[in-house]
Amino acid sequence: MIIKNRTLLKDIIKELKSQNLKIVFTNGCFDIIHRGHVEYLNKAKKLGDVLIVGINSDESIKKIKGEKRPIIPLYSRAYVLDNLKPVDFVVPFDEDSPIELIKIIKPHIHVKGGDYKEEDLPEAEVVKSYGGEVKIIPLIEGFSTTNIIEWILEKYR
Image (cartoon, rainbow, N blue to C red):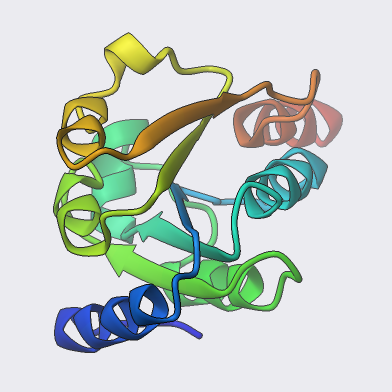
């Protein structure tokens, strides 16, 4: 389910927590979804009962990755994520970081890929402030959206 409304998100979180479900949260651009993303999401889901994915808006990706990104627009990316087996909820966000979503969701576990270190994550402090955990999942070697874009450009020059 794609949740665009933060009030609805709050209601859903309240219901999930009333059922004592373990909530896992991750976030990212998910621009061109590939095997690395799918394996990462499967591993994240195994850490709890419910997997919520925060997805960067097109504008926030432009700030992070540059004017030529994203390749795929937000609602196409969100639709694909929403239809992957491990994903329960997809929440678009405009902010530069997922901190505001984390403050609403207060996931039991916040997951990031192996290209991050916990001490470098600005959201780690927020997660720990309410007793949550940060987990880093190793990346699958050779799979990244940037590498795929470079490969395509090279192949078709």
